[in-house]
Length: 271
View 1 (cartoon, rainbow, N blue to C red):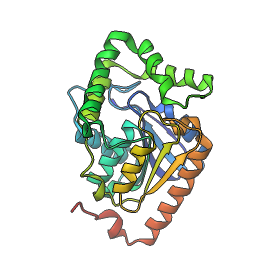
View 2: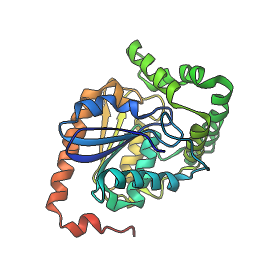
View 3: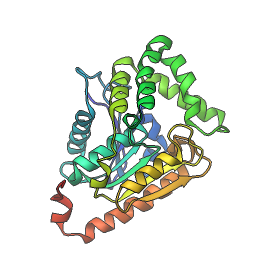
């Protein structure tokens, strides 16, 4: 069973959370953009209310599940795809592999994947053992505060820690961490044809603006936005700014899609 939260009416929008989170990470988007977007925020396999995966998933197996959820909730209509951190890696791969599915792409605090660097890959793989040793609560207290800016509101820090502690379980987290450790999207991004917005918190201590610049440099025609006063979870820390960009960007993408022949939108192929 794959769980999700759903809100709003309007343009179909799919929201993919980070490796230490759940659909709760999109509370500000689900409540504040519901007048214009029909949003579905998933709990990834093995997270929060979703069942643990029955077998190990690779990156393309996650893409298959993203596509299946989009089809289940929106039929054949292309979606605005929004991914944060690890969810951004899944979103980038989805946009490259399934171009007809994606009307627009927004990634926040994303990267090319930890597989671009052996040290980062090893560090990512170590996290699964850390979760097993510490348990979800202590794991979240160790990792959660770093996801926000150094001067973040203490109440938000506690919310992020609590959300992480409630979301992560060893089967789902280990699967996601292995996929992240193996991921290297260096060769994928040039194939993305959807309008793309790359966002990062200006004070992100996890992936940071440099990773956002790497992505923006590789995705043709993409836009880059650095969110002032935000860390890795910019959509939670500066929701008004992020939501303003999401609202404007999805509107523009819808206008662009309406101006294109239907065959351009539904029959784009990967070279």
